[in-house]
Length: 268
Ligand SMILES: Nc1ncnc2c1ncn2[C@@H]1O[C@H](COP(=O)(O)OP(=O)(O)OP(=O)(O)O)[C@@H](O)[C@H]1O
Ligand SMILES: Cc1ncc(C[n+]2csc(CCO)c2C)c(N)n1
Image (cartoon, rainbow, N blue to C red):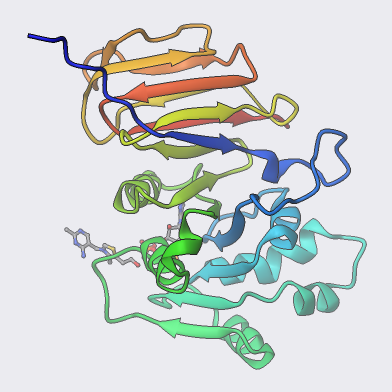
């Protein structure tokens, strides 16, 4: 019998160039192939790069109490500017969630400026982040979605149940490019349907990284570009998972028979 051909998966490319300051020498001018950015702000302290990502986003959504963070946190991140002017220019397009955390005066302030308020307090089975991603997914046509990156601010470094809920959202929407961000690290899902080419922006991320089979074990993962590469290796909780790995090359490749979580540290 003829040997079975290895499974060919289409390649998906990932880059964190959205975090490069626009003045960076290697920062390319936005081109027609660049992903559209949607920003989701969670109820956690704003990362330092929140104003930069806000200016790059085509749509800005606050998950419930995330609106308080924009109201309080943007003026704090931009201390040279008048707080009222900052609040007028950093206006969310949408505030969505179960509305038990957004302060009434914050809701009223943004509502008066034209922000759409979507109250889903009847739904106590999905998280506010889930509600926001579903909203963005519904409001983007299928053709746009492959070219859409959703950047989520404040997803890590807080309550562990919320962090796990945020990571679960990556698994709930595996075909959407969602990046969870904090001041310290970024996380995204590598779907088993693709081979992944990750372009590591060494000026802003690494060298530490991890490759973690959160949903289910992997019986075969192969990587290049890491100090400790995997070669058709199994990973599982209770066995090997790849933490405290180091990025060695500008391009890391990953192929796996399971969905994996990829994470890199962000430089301060
Ligand atoms: N400490 C945290 N760590 C990580 N993510 C968080 C944290 N707090 C909130 N979030 C994220 O921000 C979203 C909005 O937060 P908010 O506090 O408004 O939610 P909530 O539904 O009121 O939460 P809960 O009732 O469990 O406190 C959450 O869905 C979650 O994704
Ligand atoms: C098994 C189970 N566990 C927890 C919750 C509670 N919960 C999950 S998401 C959410 C909304 C938070 O804004 C709430 C209250 C549930 N419904 N089902």
